[in-house]
Length: 118
Image (tube, rainbow, N blue to C red; front, side):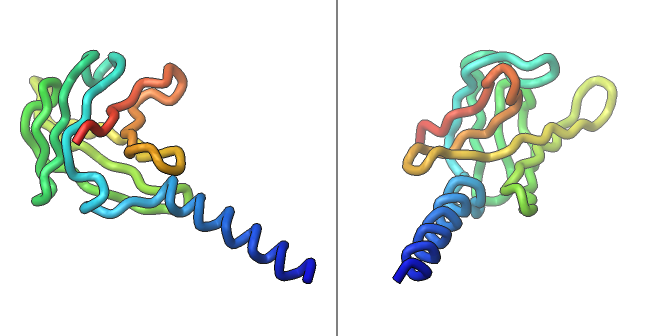
């Protein structure tokens, strides 16, 4: 009986980890708004629209393409953009806390992120 309870708890914790850290394209497409400003990142209240065809529109980065990457730590998104010195990339981790909408975290230390609004 104790092994079944322990297995159930470990299984539940594993499911919660997967749910909070791993995303598919269909889960993240939508409109996001920034809550802060990074050095070379978005401005406060910047809007980022992720489209189904792996393209995006943003006030800070303009229009471009994005890619999703999965690793043991979760899903990350890479924004590919052009700027005055050539081409650039911006990597953000994607997280959520159980039932809350996904967040694209661009500055973990200062708690700056894009929050999905639709």
